Structure formats: C-alpha cells, structure tokens
Length: 282
Length: 307
Image 1 (cartoon, one colour):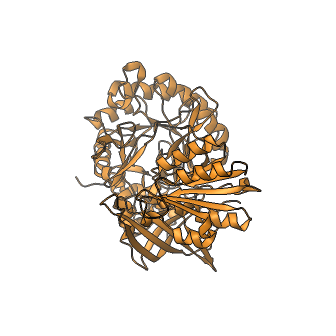
Image 2: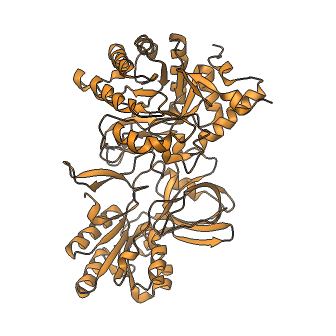
Image 3: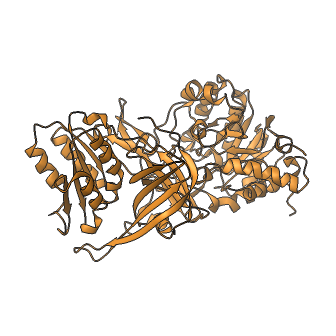
C-alpha cells in the first residue's frame, strides 16, 4: 500500500462527544472525546496513520496534536474521519470545546502503516490499551478482509476505558475480544498481557504476529512477551511532536543500528509511528 | 500594476532573493521535507537544518515541550552531515527556484571550516548561515555567540574558507547584541541573522523534573517575537551590513514589524510546525501591503521605524 502526500486542510466538526470513565480503584475520572471530522477531499488513509489537529484560528495552545485515525469513511469528494482522544492537557482540552460545524486545522494522513502482509497464513493478535485501541480498528478491518484470524486483547483501568470495545465486538465477535481491567469491572482483573500470555501458551504451535498500541508501559510489557515467545510484534509509538511531518525532529526514538553506540535516533512521525519491536533500542 | 516579483525582489548579502521570506534553520528539514505542502519555487530562501562536518546523532528524548506562546527544544543538532547533504539533498533542492542557504555549525573553528570546505563542492548554494550558538569546546565550552572575540574569530575563519556570502546568526542570550553585531561585521560577515532561540526551561511540578532531557533548551515561537524585534532594531543602528529577522514570525504583520525594525529578509520558524503554509501567506501579504502603501519595492520599508 502506498501513502498519499499529506494535505493541510480545513476540516469541519461533525460530532464531538465527550464521556468519562471513573474506575472503582481511583476517585479521579478520565475524560475522553469521540471526534468526527469531514475533510473536503477524498483521501486514502491507511491503518495506523495519524493526523495533526488544532482548533482553527486559535493560537493558544500553539501546536497541533497528533491523533491516530479510528475509522474512515470515504465519500464522493470528501472523507469522514473519526478519532478517540483522552483529555489530558491544553491541546486536547481545546479540542474538547469544539462544536459541530467548527473549522479544524487538519494535516494528514501522516506516518507509515502496519505490515499486514506479515500475517499471511498466520494469526493476528491485537494488543491495545487506552486510546491506543483507536489506532488498530482499521487494521482489524484490513486483517479480516484478507482472512487473517484476528483476536483482540484490550486493557484499561475500568470498563469505561476500553475505548471502542463495542465496535470491536461487533467486528470480531465477542469470543475474539478479550478484555482486562485494573478494577475488574470488565473481563479479568489486571493487565491485558496476562490473558495474552495465557493465549500464547495454549497456542504455542500457531504462527502469530502481534500488533500493539497503547501506553508506554503496556508496549514495553507486550514487547517482553513477544521476545519470550519469539513472536514478531509491530508497535505503534507515541512521542511529543511539534509538526508530524519530520521537520522538528522532536519525536526521536532510538532504533538499533550497526555503529559504535548501537543505535541512531529515528523520527516517530515519518519513520513510524509503527516499528517492529526488534528494531527498537529499548 | 506592479507584479509581486517587482514589489518583493530584494538583494541581501550580494544575493538577489525573489522575495524576503525564508524558512528558518531547524524548522524545514533540508527544504525538501516541505515540498508536498508548499511551493518551494515561490519561497524566497531555504535556510537548512544545521549541518556539521560529520553527522550528529542528536539528544536523547524528550526533546521538545510546548510552553505558552511557544516551545522549548533541545534536539541536539541531529543532522545528516555536510557530505550527505551535498550528495543526497542538494541535487533535488537546486531544481527549485528558491535560494539555498545551508546553516553550518561546529564545536571548534576547525569544524566550521571543515563543514564549509565540504559544502564548497556543492553546486547551487547561494550563501552560508553560521550558527554560532554552539559551545567552543577548545575554549572551555563558552558559546561563540556570547563573546565578541570568539564570534569574530569564527566569522573570519569561515569568511576565508568560503567563496560564498557568509551570514552569521546571532544569539539573544547576550548582554549587548550591538557589540557582537559590530565584531562580526568587522570580521567580514556579509549579513546577520537574528535571533536564534532564547534559552529557556520548563519543569513538571508533579515529578519535579525538567520537561526536556537536556534540562534547558531553546525557546522559540511568538513568545520571543518582541525580544527578536528589539535585537533587530538595536543591530540595525549598530551595523551597515544587512539583517535577516527571525523570532516568532507567523503572519504578514509579524514580518512587516521586523522589516520596519531593520530586517531586509525574514525567516519563518516555529510557525512551519503548526501552519506549514505560513510562508506562502506572508509572501502574498507583503505584496498586498506594498500595493496598499504605494511602495514600489519592499526594500523601501526596511528600517523605517520612527523611534
């Protein structure tokens, strides 16, 4: 699959629903937004790619925020794109104030895509946590299209943090969606890597590829499991980035390299955001 | 009616620029990184990412943090090296009508001269811009930019090694920018760029750790614009060589402020990150301003501040 040139466009808000999750184990709620935009152009957007977004005409905060596409619907001459975000700071707070019809600075589609071919005649396991689940929904659709048996392992603090869970159940079937929550309000209590490991032990003879997106700690834990069972894993990384197009060089990630230090810095935005776990110098 | 080209063509440091608008070093890669988003043939100049004689790995993350009205960066001058730039980037970049100005740095005078020697072999380069904000490791690590003698010394050495105009980029982190500007002019600089980033810091109040790996970094964006305008104004009164204004420029109005303060050219930096087409809008806006004010060329406005 080839990527199109990124476009800097004014998109329009079609939907911006806010919701909260209050885990039993914590008294603090986490706030999320479900954002749907209409881009005035038919765009080809690949699984795992992202866009840089900002409320149009607002310069505080200054920088756009990177967000992975959740779902994409192409129309004649326009594209409808959906994102799931967590309200964490000034940038996402500003996005959360947008109303239907508001103009949005949109730069996309950015970054690389998952290697879907890698699962040919293999099983795919999607391991996700938090808003990371958004980045694999289109991948799951793509895997199903090519007939790859696909199973989701989704984790979060509480039931309300399993973002997009119902959509995944509808797509993959309940039996293929395994969940874990820290407070035990949905699925098993604990981290998602526990059922993942159990599954790998029970299916040791099946060739498998892992695709993962989520908090840093979860990605590290998933990479460890991948190492232990010698399974290739593609990880979708996140890093602070000012531009998303490779010019600020802020989103550096250490990647193994044949040199004295053993690594070089690559850019999460244009070399990634998706890397094979074996490439990473963690 | 006069064309945009007639209104905006301007000479600076012996080079004719199609318009006074360039992209600042460190905010446009090697120019080509922006080719899908802007018309490089319309851009006045590309000031490339800083190039050293040898490639540089850059700093460990985190490298950037957004602050009010700007951002702090400590990228660590990661770059592909002058040799790779000449071999792999320059051939494509010179197909565009824009002026090509590699930004050059080193950690000793020899390293600056070495980088220039490599770039001298490159075809289609119009001038060099020296980043002198690096520490001089042979002189105890003090920045070249913070000492008039050292700033002059590196300027003179590069002037000798270069067949092309030499633009020296000054740091705002000095007591008297006019003194440094004069020293660099006397040492043979053909023009001055000002300003580089202002040193800043940001702390996470929960972890009590600095928000970037390098502890301190360079503050850029609209937050530093008034400092930059002041530096251009002071340098304009101190030297005769032309000035290139940089610091938080994002709009036509910002660019005009610098030109009125004394800049012949301007560079757009941090705005490229959040508004990649800012340079294109500013070029159109400057032509429109000339027509509105009945100026036959933008150069008529340079240094016309009534102060």
